[in-house]
Image 1: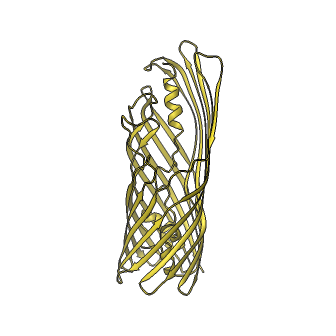
Image 2: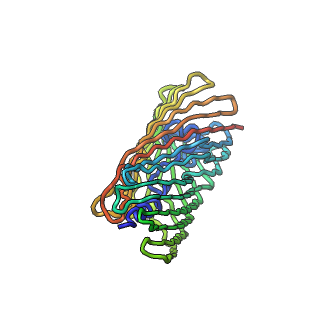
Image 3: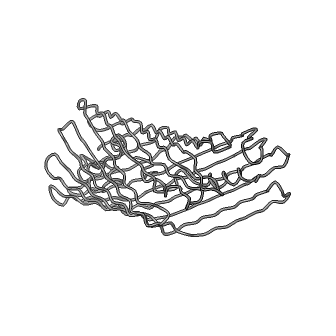
Length: 400
């Protein structure tokens, strides 16, 4: 059939990189990003609003903080997806992802924060010539694809120190998602016939996201943290418009549909431990569990580990390891495209420069995974999918 290639790619590219398949796409904050996101038992700055608001009460002073992924690179490679040729999806850009201010008063800490927890932008303009190992030989295949996807959180956070060992905290975020994908595909066959498809997909979503945290100092070296969170979607809009011309027709078919279906979000809990070996060395570990409430998703457990070591009072190195596992079901004979399942594993490296009133942190965050993708609309067959993501981080904190 001549429309095999069109069907395959039309279904596949609708899937978004930031389509809530992963729970740890962005590690917010300079110190937390250097520790691989293992921050639930630390959280002693304004970025703690995202990890464990209970930790903010242990901040050393009032502060102003901001960070950005100075440059990020995303690359996905689908093995032999177009005939016998690989298909690469690449993107890169600058993402300012966090800003916050924290104010302390006795045993209380108040914060107002803004963060971009997911961001992806893709522009592709590709052409493939003389594809012969398909059912109908293709002279030219052209693809134009533009995708933008972002998730933003903004809101207040509060922390209270109950006593010398216990603290509680609550963050209440307004969550907003905007997604749009436009794609145009054109195929010229060797018999001079042609096909093309145009698709425009829009998703918008608004939610409230509360996060409750508790932190407990076990002794002078060990700290434990525990959090619970869930995004509660209260409005959603999904719209798709598609036009298509087949090789056997001169007319154009057009389909348009929209709905306000709200997605089911997981229950999230995180348990963290911090071990202060000395005033110059910190080890941290987090275990994150996501309980799926949508039967098209699976439960996920992620682990992260961090190490911070001060060279002297003005400089510190940070290292981290973490997992970012997919919540998609694995492709099988019972599933239909588009489905992909790739678990990501990452490492972070950061360096911090301290002055009496400020901190500047720089670092890199990289993760990689290899799995399977189901992209054939009429087959349960899969192709190998590899993902590589790299982000360079810059963060600044000012205490006053």
